[in-house]
Length: 226
Image (cartoon, rainbow, N blue to C red; front, side, top):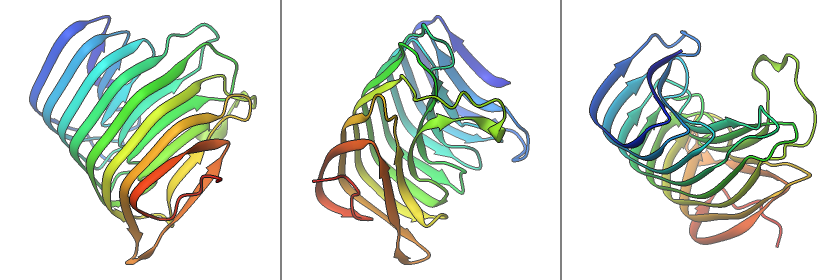
């Protein structure tokens, strides 16, 4: 399941890591963090068949920098909301990293069911995308393989997520996708100097139940309602 699992830990430093698994090996997360606090990842090359880094319920105060991810599923918060009574994720900072040919780039994912979980105060900054699918994505209808999907509105409240200085190339025409919950819409999403292209052309963005603001140069154009 995981190369490295950090569970119920405090003040952990992971430094100068190299992790590799075949591209088509399912559930081979590079680093999985849950129910932990004060985690720092400083410098890592991660090539896997699943998330390079996954941040699960009950995690806070995480600093990630200098990660080269790919192939893999990117850096993910979640999945969250699988259980009704579940802790949230807060104070996550991801900086100075590269996503290369990943299935997702920067992802927040939650199940479509009622829950007490949440995501708040997250910053993604200075991230380069190199031909990655879904460079920026929030998916609150997460259901792998589309089997036994709950089909309800996600109860995970997502707020205060900032994307700053994200640039590069998208392998999918939709480079920014915010699919949030109808029952608990995403709020406080911020895009600052985001430049993503698709085959040297302008990419597009999609918003569902998502609100926020933009500043600087943002391409594709924001889909937030004014």
